[in-house]
Amino acid sequence: MLKGRLGCSLLSSTRRTFITRVTVTHQQAPRSLSLARYSSQSGSNSGSNNSSSTGRKDSWRTMAESDISRYLQETHDRVFDHNRAWAAEQSKNDPEFFTKLSAGQSPDYLWIGCSDSRIPAEQITGLEPGEAFVHRNIANLVVNTDLNVMSVINYAVRHLQVKHIVVCGHYGCGGVKAAMTPKDLGLLNPWLRNIRDVYRLHEKELDAISDETARYDRLVELSVVEQCRNVIKTAAVQQSYAKNQFPIVHGWVFGFGDGLLKDLKVDHEAMLHGIQKIYNLTE
Ligand SMILES: [Zn+2]
Image 1 (cartoon, rainbow, N blue to C red):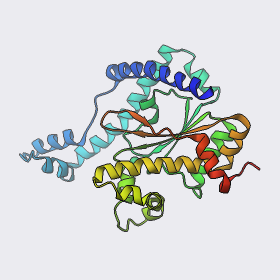
Image 2 (image 1 turned 90 degrees about the vertical axis):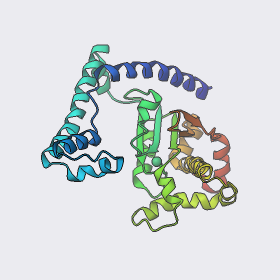
Image 3 (image 1 turned 135 degrees about the vertical axis):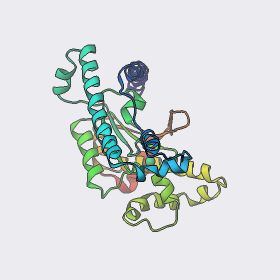
Image 4 (image 1 turned 135 degrees about the horizontal axis):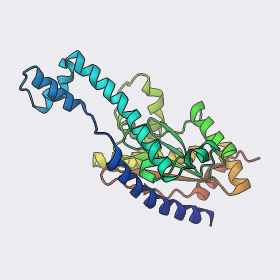
């Protein structure tokens, strides 16, 4: 009941706010910057005719110091340009917007996603400021010795009383790809070990997939499901669910190809029963 109602609310909100944001972006976003543009300018200034993609890719190394300084200044300033435009637009649409924002937060969602710059949680879901408590790390992992994610879950569940916890992975995840590479990756080893452990848990299924991309995609999905299980293992989630019937844990995967979220349809109730023989922390 609760799940269905909140789900519908998210869907309608998503459509409405997405349209608004597209409009704002086209009207007000300052022109985007890229190193390539600066590099080609730099190349023409110095008389270079090297326009191959390889040359352009490396040409920032030979950019004039003044071009690099200008690029750094403009990429810094554009954020403030965007911020001023965004603040003005919010106030124009709702003069009480920032007064309401200052009053406090009561988000329905905790979002645990990947740090990858291409998956901004609010933009792809249409959630507004105040609607999602967000935690992101490399490959959206929920590690029980990570004080950061454990603090986030604890605070979100016990104090904010979120109704949904979403673990959102994405196809093409560099962290998962790195974990599939049998190689010493230094400081990343202990972090990626968590994904390698997921591979070991599902070794038979994954090894049976001959296509490497399909195997990689499946590991992304299996890791998300495993991180959902890790969320459900926490005392905060188990105790809140026993008392309030929420939060519900969801596993989603974002695809760059079409921009859509795939719901892995994690069965919260079944997963909870599955882990409680060993991990029951409700007593
Ligand atoms: Zn990623």
